[in-house]
Image (cartoon, rainbow, N blue to C red; front, side, top):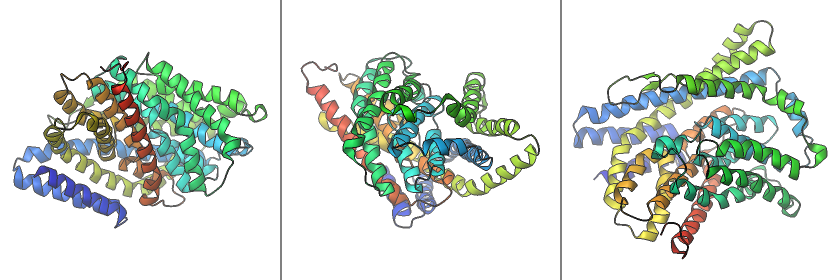
Amino acid sequence: MELWIVLTAFAMLLVGVFVLKKLWAGALAALLLMLISKGVLLPNFGVVYLPLVTALVISLELALLLFGAYLFYTTLYANNHFSTFIETTSSFSSKLAVVIMLCVFMGSFMEGIAGFGIPAMLIAPLLITLGFTPLTSVVVPLAANTTAVTFGALGTPLKIGLGINHPDSTVVLTVLLNSLPALLLPLLLAFIYGQTEQVSFSWKKNLRMLVGGGLSFAIPYCTVGVLSIEYPSVIAGIFGLLLFIVVFIPKSEHPTPDFWLKTFYPYGIFVGLLVAAKYVLQGIGWTLYEGTRPLSLYQPGIMFIAASIVYLLIAKKQRVALHFYNQSKEALLKTAPSMITIFLLVCLAQLMQEDLFGIMNSYYAGLHHNTKLFVTSFIGVMGSFLSGSATMSNILFGNAINTNEIAGSTLPLLLALLHTGSAIGNAISLQNIIMVTSVVHQASVGYEKIFKFTLLVVAAYIITITALALLMVNSPFAAVQ
């Protein structure tokens, strides 16, 4: 029964997205179905109440993050902060190089430091500022925010999601599975860029730069990934960017140190505040009700707000309070509708968690071995699609895989596939899409257009890692044997 209820709720959600073009309507219908079914089949108030309290906490955190990110960007934009950035990047002979620099390298660095869907939320407005279409500005950062999520914010998806605190066989296999996609990602982004911008470019002319971008990211990602679970995405972002610029960008186009300082010092303020707060405030919080998720004092959204204030104090000598008030008012008005939709989605995901765990326990163990290699990564994708988090997806399904495969020799590979799928799912996460489209406010971008390209990324990624997993299992030298 629970399988059909979950499938029906999922179908309602998709009808809202693709038929009604109103995600909130699909989420509301699916949520009402879950509430009614649990009230009838499981007349236990705690079964509904506890997930909804947790959903309220998560929604408050996401709403604060969305408001803060929007406020941060509009504060920079209103003060003409991006003039030097636009002038310098407009002189690049290849717009693709700008896309790769921002989406692959800067995105990886931001993911490694912050996570929480922040990379796409910050990069999308930058692309809009540079004159890229809203569709490109939304789709390309989402499509790029995949491989870096495997290590996420200082290893959070592994530490919290799977209970892995140091590189083990699962981490090594995760690196191996993601090595080829990391190498090919710039090529896939280039294809998407050509489609969303509706421009033609010479693959032959740009091939060296695109392959170089893949190598510049993949080499530090793989090297650091087998040594640490905290810093692969950070190192791949920073050192990969430097390597990419020095080797694959014409010397005449190399940005000056002054350019980096003027453009990104507000982001440095944000990262500095975030890292400091993470070490000081993480672990401090309040539990609204026993058995529910605590409300943490460490909130990236607050750091966005604080960074906005610090920037205003540096950039403006007077009327800081008035400017902050006006920008905050605009940010709240622009993001409020998205906050409501996010709340509905989070409630739905929380109510589905126990049912999804039960469904997986019932059906997963009986699958054919090779089928598991495909299904496991797909399960991770769906977990992120619904929950909006690779960490939550790993928590949701990791225990089920551990339970069903505890004696199996391929457990590390299956966990690596789940974890990789959870990272890939960020590209199609409904929460991520809502938050990114909310900060790209020049024009609305339809969900069907976004999914047309992000689903392509997900499909290509799953096919690639499944093929690699099959090779690992069937190779006479397979590490998982």
